[in-house]
Length: 328
Picture 1: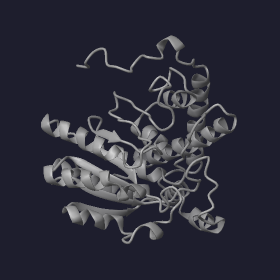
Picture 2: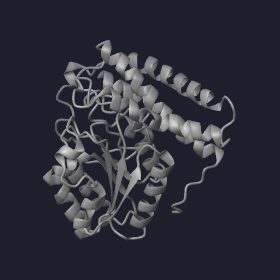
Picture 3: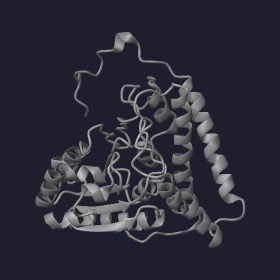
Picture 4: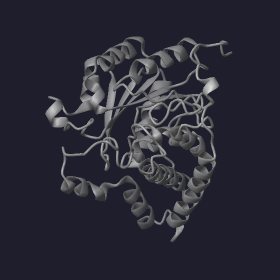
C-alpha cells in the first residue's frame, strides 16, 4: 500500500464528512441521554475525531478493529451504520448487538469491528488474539487496536506489547492520548509522558503524531500499516489529542479549567481542517455547509429509524448466553 495521502477533492470531502458524522451523531446522543432515552454510561469523542477517521483510511475491509469504550467515533468511521449504532445505544433489538451491548460494547462482525471494552486496556490482549489468528491463517490482515493513554499502566498493555513484538504480530497499536485518562493529568500519572517511547522497551517501531490533524494521522497510519504488511512486525502510533467534553456524562470535570479547554478550541480537528480546505481552495464556497447538511439529513433519518425500534423480548433473555452453533 502506498503510504502517501492523496488529497484530491473526493478524499478531503470524505474526511470532513466522516468527522462531521461523528460530531453530529454525538451531539444527538447528548440530547437523547438528557431525555433519558440513552441510559448508563456515555463517553463522548468530541475533539478526537481525527484519530479514528485518519486511522480507518489506512485499513482494508479485511482488517480488524478492536475499540475502546469511547468507541462511537471508531464504529462510525469503520462503517457501522448510524441507525444500527443509535438503536444499540437505545437498547433496541435493531441495534448492532440487538441492544445488549449499549454504548460501550458495539460489535459488527461483517466489518470486523470487534467491539469496545468497559475495562481499561481490556481490548489489548483480545487484539493480540485476533492478530495471531490472522497471522496463523496467513490472511494478510492487520488488526488496529485503539486504547487511551491511561491503559499504558495496565499489565495487559505490557504483556500484549511483549507478545506482539516476540511473535511479530500484524498489530497496529493506536494510543489515543487525550492527556487525562479519566481525570488524572498525564504528567501526574506518568514519569515518562512521551508515550511512544514506551514501545522502545519492546524494540517496536513507534511514532507520535498530532491527533488533531486528520491528514497527519492518516499519513502516519498508512506508513505504519504498510510496514506491518511488509512483514516488519507490530507498529505503535501515539495520537496526541484532546477531548473537549468530560470523561463521561457523569464526570463533573473538576480536574481541568474552562480556560484550558478554551485554549484548545482553535485546534478543533474539524474547524482546523475545514479552515485549511477553504484557504487551500480544496473545497468550493458553501461546500462545507453542504456536507454538514448531508450529515444532518443522514442523522435525522437514523434517529427516526432507531426510535422506531423495539426492545428485545423477555423470552429471548437467555439467548446468546451459550453458543448453539459454530460459525463457519
